[in-house]
Image 1: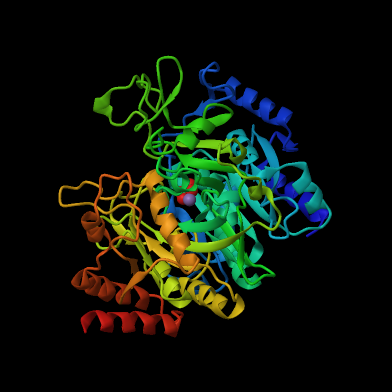
Image 2: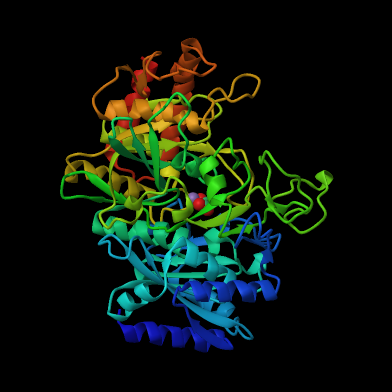
Length: 579
Ligand code: OXD
Ligand code: MN
């Protein structure tokens, strides 16, 4: 696509949407401040306490526009089967007609912003370009924080680099007229009727996961819903770990964890908290970049105890969405140790009878560079080499604290069969267990069967693949209490994972995976003994038999594209469990 095609596309969109004005974003600080000023003037942003939180602002969204809308999100491929049973599908022609009707005249009286952006470090061979056209200055401000937005990306596109075309309008924020459409074969995204992050910041889920996963399959790499964290031992050895957890299951907390007191000399380096693009490197390892430049994290539950690094990075230059505020205009959410909410997320006087003060999916938007555990590696063109991949979810029972896959194919099965309790990050019922393979259920832009085959194909292509593990921080006892302390103490599990990557630490082999020995995980300083740890790593044979009968039915839903080797492996494990 050339320079002309960017301009021609902008002209076509303007002819359809009929904005009053067109603004080409350059990504400068001055432009950001101007945008903030306009948002403050029309009330879309509210100034927070500038003494305690300089350059921090609050946005209150429409109360019916607070999360991703999976039932209104579509993958529009020419062949329906390519989208797979894991996606909603619409015929591309029908989808374009529907969207063009919605877009007709939708920007009258508004400014059309052209937002050129780069996902990944600008000079990285792994980065990808995009342009989002939007009529929401709130979206522009967020895109400036979340992506490398502005002139550098525009220059590359105008020099002829290919780019993803994203068109977004908030429309009337009517949930009945809301669609998030993906056309992977056209590298195009159409979003209408929502201003919420995952629906509206098109660089994130729409581009960096749904479209990118499609491209990654064609080009031989992986676009995943994973954090990337570096763990440095006191000896100065750093291992990078990529970990997939569903939305609102603690990716941000794990990516920024602060080592427990007993781990003197250990350091944590945050490369990313949500998305990971992995490529086979020249040395036969997988190398990862975080395509994003900021964090769009879940605020409730974030505290000095759970994530002190996040609390530190949220003291300045941040946008808060749907949090509560204290009487002196400081941001507040459930889980915070200090402060009292005076006004709830909808701007009403806070009254506990009306429910929570902040929305359960309230968010912060902040530059990655503000995190105390930020590492310059996050901006390095080659990315970082990955030693281990973790798959995790919220499971009150069954799934052990940590379990290692026997080989890559088994690791792919662990990822493909993971399940988790649903959270407030998407509309719909919260707390029901659903299968969420690789934490990509809402984000895989094509048929899961093809996706697993693509994952499996790395066994032949990459000689030094990461080791794969399944983890579960969320086991509960009979009284409903969490059995594992989690947060900073998760480093204890990461230490075991790293030992395994180095060929150290013994394991107990079970049909479902390799678990640590009872003394394998360092419990020093915890109010927990080896007996208690044992109950977290013991494999419940009959529970797993039941799980595997469900897994097989689930996997069958992806035939005929389910890789035969995966079906065979599941069958084989089930047989071992019953013998
Ligand atoms: C997110 C999500 O916003 O997964 O990262 O919903
Ligand atoms: Mn996410």
